[in-house]
Amino acid sequence: MRAALYDRCGPAAQVLRVADIDLPEPGPGEVRVRIELSGVNPTDWKSRSGATPRPIDVFQIPHHDGAGVIDAVGEGVDPGRVGQRVWTWLAAAGRRWGTAAQWSVVPERQAVPLPDGASAELGASLGVPALTAHWCLFSDGPLAGRTVLVAGGAGAVGHFAIELAKRAGARVVTTVSGPAKAELAARAGADLVVNYTEPGAAGQIRAFGAVDRVIEVALGANLALDLAVLSPGGHVVSYAAEPADPVIPVRACMNANVIIRFVLLHGVPAEALDRAARDVAAAVAEGALTELPVHRFGLDEVAAAHDAVEHGAVGKVLVVPG
Ligand SMILES: NC(=O)c1ccc[n+]([C@@H]2O[C@H](COP(=O)([O-])OP(=O)(O)OC[C@H]3O[C@@H](n4cnc5c(N)ncnc54)[C@H](OP(=O)(O)O)[C@@H]3O)[C@@H](O)[C@H]2O)c1
Image (cartoon, rainbow, N blue to C red):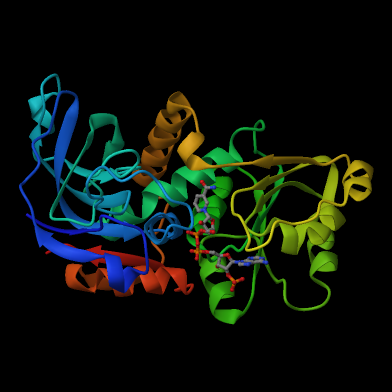
């Protein structure tokens, strides 16, 4: 099969290449997926560049997320799954078989049925962003009737955080940096969209209501805003590192009685990931999740796809393995 891969960390154009390699066979408990679309996330370029390196087992095919069709199953897996449309999650976590290839092999629980009505574009966008959004949202009690602030609502995680929070009955306010992103966030269903680069953002959010939960993409940049709008005992859930670690204003956090929680998808317990995958699948089946605008790259353009994500492409970057 044709696969994009790297065997050392470094700049995309220097270490990523496309090679013909043997078609992998699914082992016990695994399924093989013919990949239609491979979704690129920031974690993929960070692992590849060495910014957040992960062990490489001879070679690494990048990308956790993908959409495709199961074409072979290993021992112990229901043969009836052959032919099933699926989306994958964490395909490349501790394994070399990421989705930037014509086929991937994953444990069967990491290939989740994708209903006929859902596009491959949506399926290939779900894994990392939707599971991260889910873990950020649903680990601190029910959301119905609560007010959630999603920072960066046009980002991939932010997008699904808005949609999953609305599905759970929350009131959702989100922040963006400009009109194009405001439109995406509004389309995702946010009740209020605020431009955080303009003066008065905190006032607009406070007028909407005291915030119970913040799903935070930039803790250092936004903590002052978060503290200004949170209700006492509110939660800030931080899921992204910034170039420099923030200094935490302890007294202000004490005054706000704020709870700050940190999230890394790679360390989330297996049962919680399974629960999140089931709930995301249910949301997809209900039509509650939508895809962002997509940017397609061929397999030979995988380096450009990584660079596009690294440089903040708006929407989802997808690779077509062909
Ligand atoms: N912890 C985990 O397990 C986990 C999982 C998934 C992703 N992540 C990390 O989370 C980050 C986002 O991932 P993604 O896939 O959602 O990326 P993305 O699609 O590029 O979205 C990032 C969004 O954040 C917005 N943003 C940046 N600075 C902001 C600020 N100060 N206030 C509000 N919004 C801001 C950006 O828009 P503007 O710059 O225009 O505001 C952009 O819309 C990445 O760093 C990624 O590595 C972590």
